[in-house]
Image (cartoon, rainbow, N blue to C red):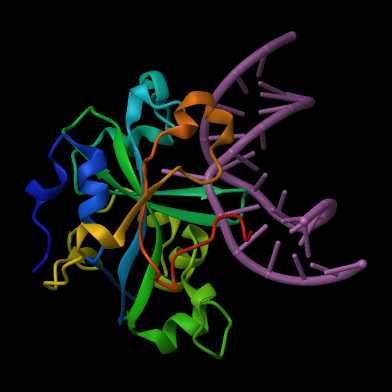
Length: 201
DNA sequence: CAAACGATTTTCT
DNA sequence: GAAAATCGTTTGG
């Protein structure tokens, strides 16, 4: 089933980030269905989080989407090259978001390989936020879309991830955020080969 | 209006 | 393991 809006509008962004593990991200662009199981996420707790674009309730054209209600897609271009896909959570005017960093490919693998210019399925196809977005065909023009149905949504297919297989860690690439960089806001599935290693290290 | 920077990936050594 | 690529957004004058 497609996750209802009530899943996203809850207030605990960290908890939602953890619960997203094992859910299935589906996109239906170009008349092709591509999907993958979410294996890595990062929470960005809005105003109180120095690592967030919306730190201190900063409100600009770019971050505007984060102030929408939960269940909205926020896509942002990083380093001029990479599209990063986030899910907005919480109520309207509360800029919380969850960055989806990696998925395990399920459907439309052929299409994903094509988009990534690869011929063989390997973890690097979707391990990492930029790579994942490219494989699923996510573009910055898709920012602001609702996740309640096609062309983009997240499904619960009954996959259960037990607590002992969930690892909490610090976020990647946010060293500039000082003390907030130390928060354990990153979650990933233990021993899953599609989890990004972060910065290719 | 101009300058600096980044929630990364890829490629070369 | 290190460095470059590359451009929209943000910040300062």
